[in-house]
Image (tube, rainbow, N blue to C red):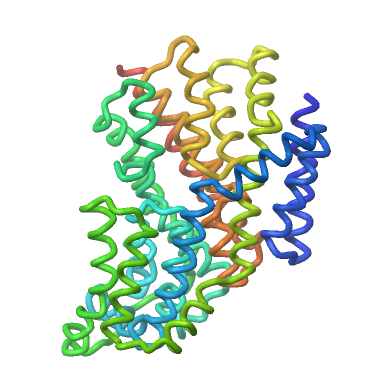
Length: 398
C-alpha cells in the first residue's frame, strides 16, 4: 500500500504545480526527483536511468520529430499554406464541426509520439472566428487524433496486444471498432458548443487549395505506405520545401532556430525521464503486485491494472507490455476480456497528465489543464460504459 501512497503523492504534486502554471517539462523533472527520493533509488541507479533517458531512441525520435514539426509548421505559415488548407477543408466539408475535426483525424493516422502538435496550428486556423475557448480547441485536437489507436494496425500498442494474446489482429480490431466509433460520436457532446452552420467558400478556391495538401500527403504516404519513420519523413519533406521555396542559408537558419526550442527539449526529457524513473524505481511493477497480493477479483484487475499503468506512463505500448503478461496468466481470459483491458488501459493513457499529446496540445493552446479534464472525464466514462456493456453481452452470448 506504500506504493499507492507514494504514487498518489507524486501525482498530487504534479497537478498542484501544473495548476500554478509551471512549465510542464520542469514539473516532470521535479516529479522524477521526487520518485527517486520516495523510492530511495541509489545514485548509480539514478545516473543509469538519466543516461538511458537521454540516449533513448524515444528521446531522439521525439526531439527530431517535434523540432521538424515546428519547422514544417513555420514554413506552412510563412507561405500561407495552412490558411489555404483550412479554406479547402471548409469548401469540401462545408459544416464547421466537420472542418474542425478533420485535421486531427487526418494527422492521427500518423502513429507518431507527440503527433498532436502537428494538427494544433491547423485546428487553430480552422477555429478562427468561431469564438471557441482554448480548452475547447485543445480537447478537439486531442480527442479526435486518438480513435485510430483502437483499430489502426500502424499503432504498435494494438499490434503488440494482438501478438501477445494470440488473438488474430483482425478480430482484435473488430472488437475495438465499437470503441473507436464511440470516440467519434461522443466528442461533439463535450466540444464545439454553439458551432453550427456551414462555411461559404468559392469552388475555385477549393480546387486550387487541394495543391496545398501535397506536403502533408507526401508525409503521410512516406509513413503509412513506405513505413518510413515520421522523423525521417519530416526531414525529407522540410528539405524538399526548402528547395521548392528556394530558401537561402539565412532563411534556413531562421527556420532551424525556430524549430529547436529549449523548452521543447526540457519537455521531452521530462516526459521520458519520468516514465523511465517510474519503471526503474519499481513503482509500476510494485503496484501490479499489490493488486494480486490483496486478492482483488479478476474483473477488477482486468480493468484496474491496465488503467493504472496507462495513467502512470501515458503510453499505450507501456501498459500493454507491463500488464498483459500478468493478465495472460489469469483464469477465464477471453478475447472480449482483452478488449476490455485494452480499453481501460487506453482510457488511462487518455487521462494521463504525462501523455505527450495532451501536454503538447495544452501547451500550444495555453489551455487550463483542469478545463480540458472537465471535457475528457465524461467522454472517457462513456467509452468505459460501452466497453463494459460489450464485454458483458459478448460473454453472455459467446
